Image 1: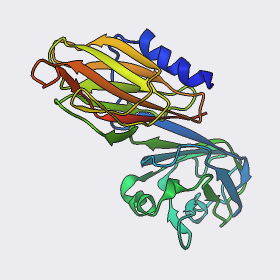
Image 2: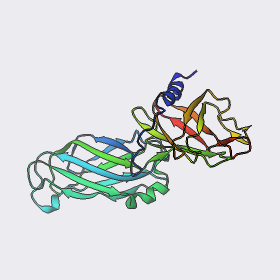
Image 3: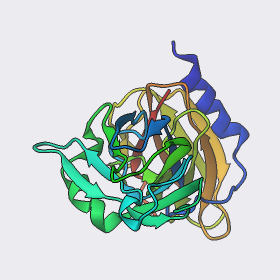
Length: 277
């Protein structure tokens, strides 16, 4: 039996106090290290080892440090292109930014690509690839030296685990959003819409087995844990969910005491957690 998924389930018990939610504007960043490369028109490939498929890329920030002087004219300013593999011909975009070093001996190119420029790539399934690659081109035109100690930061939108539905009766809602659940990352489990201060159970299991339960449908059947928690005065709850230990899948659903429902229980929607390595 997989021990890491069980550890995550037990962590839900240990971390049953309320925790701050993640910033929805972009909870997860990946830094890509750019190999040292000459600036005379060279090409380098940077393998994208994360994020997982399905993430939305909001923004990229390029900070590329170079050594040695340029050729001495504005025509030799550093230019970069980003080429990404998609279904069909590769798409190339020029990275816009500031050359902070010309014409000094050393400097930094700082550039960005925003979501508007990436929307087409996202629609074509940029992260449908297991290992998509970024291609960086150093411009010619008299530029000398090389890039060293350079990074590209990818800012991701907040990632929400899959909502499977099956909610009701009642108005309890469950979501798990934040970072992808890779090692070192975490997300926030949020329950809302429960009666004030209602006793609740967070059901968790490794199987998808929708079964009739209390006038609704319970998805994690058989369940491995049923964690007793209580809703706050506003009918909500937040728990921290640690990542790592995957690949593994955990199914979650919440039941809350609710005298207004036929069987006295309100059921949330079910959520499918994908744990990454």
